[in-house]
Image 1 (cartoon, helix red, strand yellow):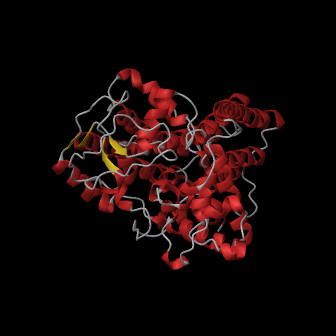
Image 2 (spheres, helix red, strand yellow):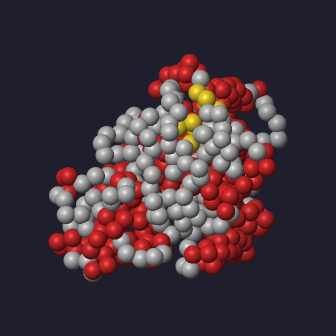
Image 3 (cartoon, one colour):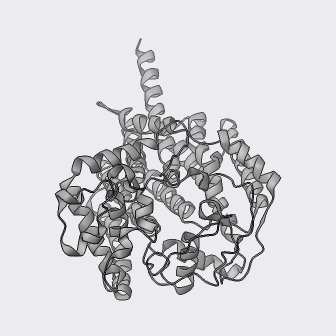
Length: 483
């Protein structure tokens, strides 16, 4: 988009409102929000600068790059700018594709205005960086009718970076390569995208092997998958080998806790595994999980489908034993808690697990430590936070909107299309819709249900819907012209 026209100016209003909401969030919470354990783990990995056990190093590298500023509040500020930038970039690429201004604005509005998105940008958490990398990859792929070799290579590298920020990003790479095949970019450009992505991921996996003794992006995928299946695993039918027996839960299925409990709680069966190295315990957990899935595929698919479908429900509600959605709603009170570790344990999820004190609801609090674990002065301004909480009650992207994005993105371009522009729109809508489904189904299949995992879909499914509506409107206009 070379310049704004009169019809493009309304998007500036969306950006302005989004900026005001982000400024208010920065005023309400100082210096940032922290999700206890996860945020400390990220900060610890940023200090050590070596591949993490639980998650890849992408976000800790981002924190390390910001650490020379010396003040933790620079993290949410940069993340808020990334959120605004993501909205502007999506609007620009949609306009570049020929989407009408009002539809392009609708496609960009969720990431600009969604209250959950804005609140998560204020956390020391990887979601915002992951989302920004997805947008960068999408823009590189969609900006030109057929992306050149440099754009393909850059897209592969950026999407590999997304996978090194959150492992579910690996699922975006097949969708990107399928898009390039559909666009008939040729083998050299396809190889540039695939080769760059494989080089980045392979280099990291090699580094991880040198550090932990096994190739991979992290050494916790077996734990996550075991936690996914333990709520319904039937060990009487399964008869696991001795090294997997500790993972069996003798309680009836109706009395078992959530998948999240099995992954993190110090009393969970996963803590009873033998083995001196986390990679070995992770391997045992992974074998057990795959054994359960082979033995009980219907139960597994039912759980995955049920949790994935919840992302498309009208509201944001959770019930016991789900991880509470309240963790991602603007907090309106703050009582400093005595749980203030001098520094995070080197492996907080495996070597030990410390429960936050009673005043830290859902393990979420205002950050009390900075980059070098120096004491901060956490502050919460209750009146501003309460205003943001009232906004968030209605200011979020409803699940049916995301479902409409999936259906429009995948189905609106169905049938025979002779117009090259319409084929380009069909391929773009398919890429966005398929990627959006992947980032929602991936965690439901391999980990736990958490509304936090919905947020990356905000930059994929609404734009897919805008593209699908454009195709439908173009077809209606073409029919009218022939009548």
